[in-house]
Image 1: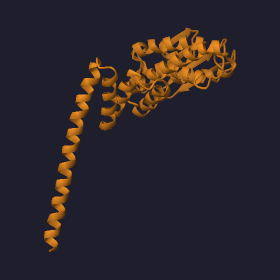
Image 2: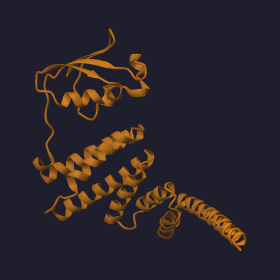
Image 3: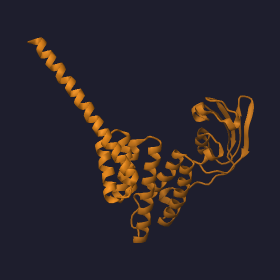
Image 4: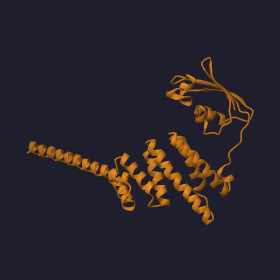
Length: 255
């Protein structure tokens, strides 16, 4: 693409760029521009007006001296593009090869703290391999390993993003593939703990310690769970005591 970005009368970004959709963040492109480019035809020239939530949002962009909540204008020419293969267009070897590539890319994003970007990469692995059938033993082992890693990594991304129901869902999918997986059990425990399901969290951390006795983090979390459960019981006892006291007072007044 060849483009020119304007804020008011000022041109803040003028470039020619080759990039992959979903990677625009790495090149300082607002996500709204990526969405718009996907709708373009080859050699088309367009002008796009981006509202703040499709531009650089409430954060703005210091690099380009764009303030928060700024409306932007981009003049774009799509010089050429290559369409990525759809899942059904790829054979098993291609799916396995691409899965390894996006797994590495996801891990890089995760290390950079770009958890949403990382999650997008791991989701590709699941969509490519979840319903793949007719695999040889070797292919099946590799596909299962990649799916397990994808679900575990997705769980970690969702925990970082405080999206606990999705984290639980991915932990459960990982544990369907490997019921005693250390990371799967531990991360599910963390997700349960985050939403105050202390008993379920305790069960997961206990299982981790039972299978992997050297896991110190699980021991620490188990102590936290026990403490939270005790606090919860104390609160309940007080609440019921107050309730019974109110009922008793009411009965006295009635009599």
